[in-house]
Length: 347
DNA sequence: AACCCGTGGTT
DNA sequence: TAACCAAGGGT
Image (cartoon, rainbow, N blue to C red):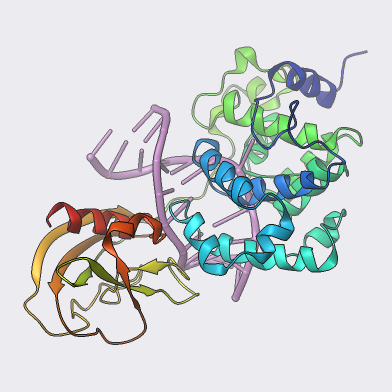
């Protein structure tokens, strides 16, 4: 009798699992430790559409600053947003605080996938992942890695996103009742290092003998993806407004909705992914052109002009004067950090 | 359901 | 180098 797919994969995982800070080697929180679900949840939210390498320093900073969910629940929105600055997809940070407060209020994380799914920032993937990894529940955990591995394993050639139903059913069919969390992480490790998007390493794959995609000859062609859309080019202007001979700079907080929502930022001319900015500054004066920075978003590429003015006037609208020497602590998203760096380089 | 939302590494 | 891609969620 041949070993099952899950047995093969778990045996491979026992030998090849990555050592990651949110997993459970000696000296770290263990399953059963009250801090364990918190660390699993935090890492899973950070890892949404974000690479392991990018997450590591943020995860370390967060668990150092806020060791448990009660500590995070007590943090200010501004502090959490600033700590998240640079990681991207800032709605995650807004939902992170909401979720922490809801969890703290109810005395801990719920242990079932269905209850976890109701928390802000937890969709189908994250609810399943936390239920499986933190609470040992059987759950069908489907992220982009699992989608790719399963589409190949079962030779599912229907294009995404339509293929998701079949992929999920196939993933369900191979998910074991025991070690469900390890199984999920094993599929993800396999997808990130062996069954990679462009050049799958079938020769070292523990599932190669069972892989219908490989037997058909072109596993790298699966899953079939929809055609990509053209990314528009946009232009905008950011304003570096200082007083006291450049010692303080005017910062605003962006609206909670929309791009870079809730983040501290330089004032700008209203550019968006849908339209160019007006170019109009928030106050009249002898503006100096400093050049431009370029930044790529998922759905638009932006060229952001940077202009400078030292003034005695208070700009229109809400905002605050921020010490320039502490600009690194303002929590600027990468786009505005680039603009600030340009302004300071030309000072 | 289709679209919006960041960033940095890889090829 | 430009395109591709990543442990997706909200609306």
